[in-house]
Structure formats: structure tokens, C-alpha cells
Image (cartoon, rainbow, N blue to C red; front, top):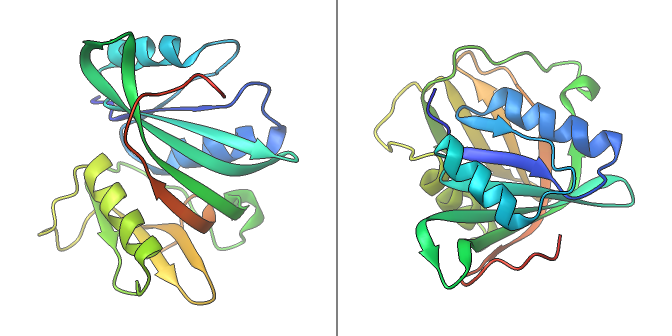
Length: 189
């Protein structure tokens, strides 16, 4: 299997954050979930390179709930003692885990991904769509992908995942804001 993203938590995650990471890994293709333990960002970058992953996502928490997803891009080679760049942060306003949703089902045999941003009107929503298109190498001409990453706005921006039948799979993520960043990764998590 080709891995795109190495997914992990911050140090000492709560049960809810671990469940959220497990939900994400279960519905998105090309994700390798690793236990953080005492690993530094440098060690995570080396592990991502070992699996051939291009990105590292670190889920942070606040008061036991997932509150932030930091996204790093793994470099092809070592540059000034850094193996990856912090490219974006998604600030989470809340999550609903799949076990909390009575309508959620499982995702099986996911190979192709599409991004549905037809309900976007804000910059945050479009930034999220662009970010997922970049990370998952989404082909924009796909008519019926195996999984839709649906970014929508009503009262606030949400991310949900739907299988080819239109059923919700995985968690629903409320997004407060997205910060697109450039520069070196700092080991602050």
C-alpha cells in the first residue's frame, strides 16, 4: 500500500483524541497511524520517510478534546537540520466521532478521493479544499470517487466524509479556522 500521510497525536493524548485519530485513519486512504509515545518531530519525520509518506499530521488537544491538526510536509532530503516543513494548521471547534453518529458506516476499499467544496463561500472553506486536494493528490475530473471529503458551510465550516453511496463515514469535524504556513517545523508539540 502507498502511504501518503503519517497520522499521530501530541504527547499523552486523551482517550477521545486517540479515538478521533483512529476514526480519521479508518476513513481516509493512504494513512499510517502511529503511536506518538515520546517521539520528537524529527523521529516522526524519519518514520514517515521510512513508510514513504509525504505528510505528517499531528492532532493536538485541549481539555481532552481534539483541537488542532498540524500538517507537516516531509522533505525529500535533509535541509538545515530539518526534515519537514509546517505547512498548515486546522483549528478545530469540535468533533463528532463515528461512534457518536447513528448514521455513520464503515469505509471499505477506498482508492480514489474527491473533494466536494460546492457549498463553500468563505476563504477558510476554500483553503481546506485546496489543502486536501494537495495532500491526497485529488484528480479534479473524478466523477464518482470511492470517498468524498465534503467541506461545507452553514453556521460554520465542517469537514465530513462520505462513501460512494453517500453515507457518512468517519468523524465530522467543525473547523474554526485554517492557517497556511511556510517555514521550518519546530518541536513544540
